[in-house]
Amino acid sequence: MSPPPPDERAPVPAPVPPAAKRVRQVSEIHGQIRTDEYAWLREKSNPEVRTHLEAENAYTTAVLEPLG
View 1 (cartoon, one colour):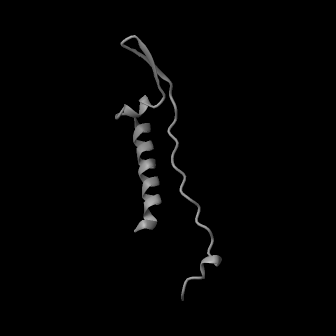
View 2 (cartoon, rainbow, N blue to C red; view 1 turned 180 degrees about the vertical axis):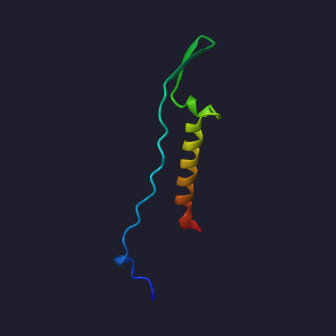
View 3 (cartoon, rainbow, N blue to C red; view 1 turned 45 degrees about the vertical axis):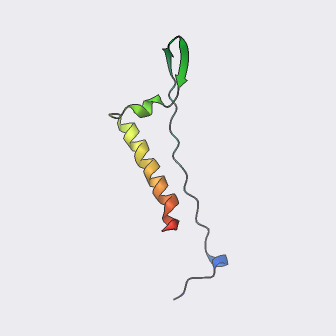
């Protein structure tokens, strides 16, 4: 059986990228105040970081899958 013509196929929803949570971290370096809301992503031992990275990898795989 051949696939239906393109106009009869259901649209495939686009993958949604994962959103990293924002955790405000303020530090002072050489007298300058710096704010980094994504510094928590540097904590390699944090299970939330691994979960987020796995979600990013799954998103990338889904986006690139149609390219073969």
